[in-house]
Image 1 (cartoon, rainbow, N blue to C red):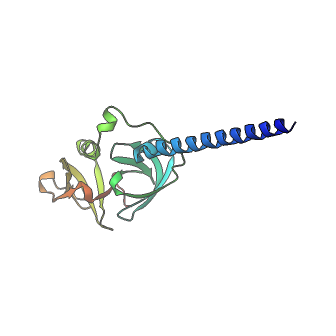
Image 2 (image 1 turned 180 degrees about the horizontal axis):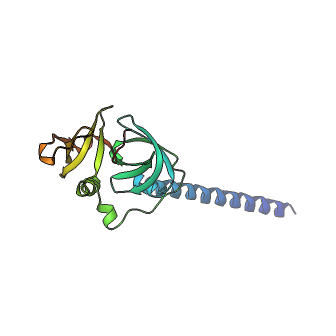
Length: 185
């Protein structure tokens, strides 16, 4: 009988050690998998959900995450669409634990310039907020280069032609957010 108790004890210790080793391996694999996730994965897993964000320029927005691009997101906040470069994000709230698939195909190649060219093509009136707090320009995107945009400026009620407008060139790293027409942040 003494031998039975000894073998039972050894068997219990082995089962405990095996269980602890398996749990440790699961935790390590989970950490390794999480280390490969990008912010785009996290954001794409939350598409359609509510999100709060703060930008490097100090803007605080809350809205619905509508689109996730390779280098930007779009949020519907207070009835306007807001384009936010990922490089401008300071913090995010409300993402939960969900993770989406990596972007693939065309979506993986659509950077900030692609989104801005669509706005330029549509001749949409936008407000370009700069990383410098409280700096904002309103107008129409006239041209989008590899790393800059040209914004044709006008004041409210300005009916001048495109040729007569002042133009400001904004490097992409200076862009904090871009709001849709009629927005006032």
